[in-house]
Amino acid sequence: MARVCILGIGPLEFEGPSIYSGSANRVWQLARPLLERGHDLTLVCMRSTAAKEPLSTPAPQYISERLTYYSLDETTQFNDDALLQSIVDDSKPDVLIGANIYPSARVSVLKRSVPLFADLNGYTMGEAQAKARRENEDGYLVHFYNIVCQALSNADAFSVCSGPYREGILGELLVLGREFDPDAVFVIEEAKEPPEKSVEDILEFRSRIAEPDDFLVLWSGGYNTWADVRTLFGALEFAMRQNPRIRYISTGGEIAGHDEKTYPELLRLVDSSESRARFTFLGWVPMNDAQLAFRAADVGINADLDCFETMLGARNRITEMLATGLPPITTRGAEIARIVEREDMGWVTPMGDVQALADSILEAAGNKEEIARKSQRGRAYAASHYTYDAAARPLIKWVEQVT
Image (cartoon, rainbow, N blue to C red):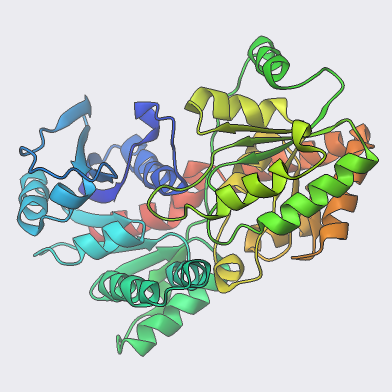
């Protein structure tokens, strides 16, 4: 068995965090299948604590016999080349993996004599474009461009989260002048394996946030730069006027240090609405409550801006909706939304179309049988496509070939 060192983003699932990002889920979805196949893992993950004073050298946490975990402050430790090199060297890896774009950039600066796999989860330059437009500051493009270039600079293989981005990264590698075998660029789709919840816990959670006859529409996770909150709000407000049973439930919120404008914009829109009493914002909640929300709601919702990040990226919330049997109502754009439409697992509408999104909410609210049918199809599809094992097959095969 191989010794594998993964640089990633925390906190991770086994820590039970209240803010559990898609980036952190990506680390665990790559790590756990390797661990289950008998490989020895060292996980070195950054946490966004932004300490202002120097910190002592971090001590390893021995999570299990074959899993060693380091949790590093992002600014004072994860960005320290010498410290990172020392931790990686101490793990004596047979292979290195960067999980997500920034850890892939960081691992690429290290001295190494072993193969390197870089996972570029999400379309970073599309996100940079959306953030630059949101903030009216083009400097973000340069900042993220430098990270992408570093992450692409010397890895031996790559993975991305969607088929469209696989085509994109091949172009990026060519632009950077790298001669590269396309067969070494893999698609690893987002994976979710939410635990089952008892009926009693689900009903108790629902009773805290809704009346028995309410129809719950759930948003889960961060409101990032590509979230179309104006279309989302407009559709919900229209649907609520037509059907007073509809209630919006939101777990998650602004993304501190990255997008602190999109979520407040939605709150301002809701505050001026005659239907504001039917919007419930729970904020970032413990992981158990976030998982219960997927079980307690009637449908999930997602609304994306028409931008490059949407077209090439992924949506963890939709993956989790399918895995929990929660039919999604989503705008068309991301690859997974097109899969939802193709496999008839939810409702899919054009981006920016308030009326179409509202009509889908109203249709779902009036059709329990259709919700049940789409729920069953979604769970079955997720069970065969979006488990950790299913998604990680390209990585597993690559590790076993090079070690």
